Image 1: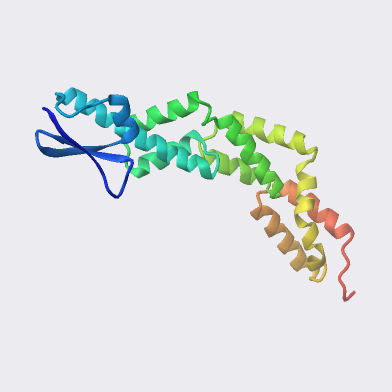
Image 2 (image 1 turned 120 degrees about the vertical axis):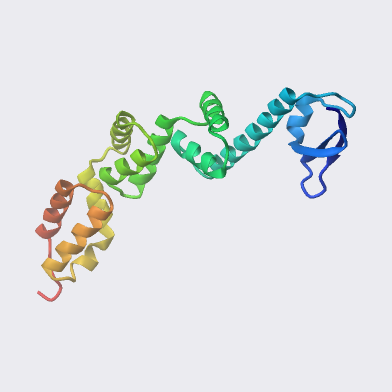
Length: 215
């Protein structure tokens, strides 16, 4: 087959339409086309065409992965799932993920540490953090190490973090009956991913200084 026309698209300036034997065949990104150095009149076979289409799909998948990473860090599993959902073939997805890992754009350990740090700043408990990271495909050992390292960085315990989480709410809770305050605090901390033990410790501390305004 012979390349008979290479035409720049009007609406998408970075794409070029390729015509083989006088008929439209497919389009390529300008970066892919530049690397190929194809010219009008050049002969290409089916094997070469398949290789080029693979390169084009690889380029698209890579660009989409970088777009996702521009919003926030992602785990390897997250990128894999999003690319598959976008319709890219598994072979393409695996190739992109491995490339990004080799370039250190994807690193589950780094991602986990960043995720834990952010969640601790938001006063979230270990149970919630662990569940979130497991859902994102992070290995349990990596999760444990990331949580331990992050707590050392903030020089705090989970009990202290739970107390910080309710501090601004204390005036509100003190206006409630004891049973209602108990339920509200417990539900709040459990929802935030704190353990039963940490929740009970926080409740004990709160009720040591509990004083209902009407009393």
